[in-house]
Image (cartoon, rainbow, N blue to C red; front, side):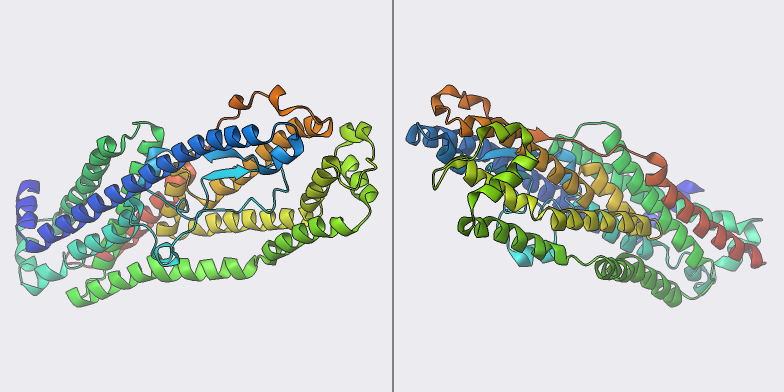
Length: 449
């Protein structure tokens, strides 16, 4: 029976077109992802070389003034990119993956990033995650919308009903054949991506595949429910397309606008203004209050006292520190609101399959907002470590030749969130069961089945 159903399905022109559409889209997305990863790796390599050349050049020019030297020197922290990120680019094309900072005030440097064409950012990247979330459901709809109505419109369903005691099983097998074909395309694309992207076969890749398969199951279950309405082919197609538009376009947009309005971010501008004013106004005020605030933040440096000169690097870096300290309140509020946006988005995504899959793929590939926020926290810690290392050397005016500058290579951050299999797959499983249950109930009510 399965063989006959498969032959009947594969003979249709729509089957070939759908498979070809997914194959081409998937192949393009894999090569787009590979191009993105190669660009990221090239940026990291160039930054590593640049940092060493940058340090060597400035240490050659400035040999007797460590404070002036460290005004210019930048040290880099890299949010390491796993090759799996090529399958779901997420926000990595917007947020900086490399944070190069001096030991001056951090708030003015945290959000520096490469220049991008805003049109390309608006359109986004065609990665495999996009193909799975948006394009696979369209092909599933084209395969399933008329599975029952076509049989009835061609008057073949009565014949099947007479020849089979449970014609419902035939319908279920037709769904199963189509699911196997779609899942086969997905697995083929993933297997093709492994050598092309040099992917590691591990739990993260398994999670990516399982999330994608469960998402496909959700759409087959939804199609099963719509087919159970026992409407015409036109009504089935219209109903499934409406579900696709609502679940993948309208509902995510509505939720996004709701979250943006609930957690606006005026603190972003306030932080920038506050850190600039806190720094620049210190030029026109007495040095002692600035140093008192600095020593309150770093009591271990109080022994350096209060220089009498009009300018000293102790006062200058204390002034830079105040730019961060006096904008800390706004900065903390900004981070807290971004975390609240992330938490609310994640909670609401449990009720929207496409949005949920997007979150899970971003978590698996380290390309979401949560990963970026953790990276920014790591950058703050990295910046503080460099300050604590160099401040005492600057304040005693240690010769630059006493420091081994070759030790300052690029540093890497690669912390990733742990996989919670139930939170990742549970909502998709529940949606699938719910849609299938509703469809089964409808079929039981129809005596012809």
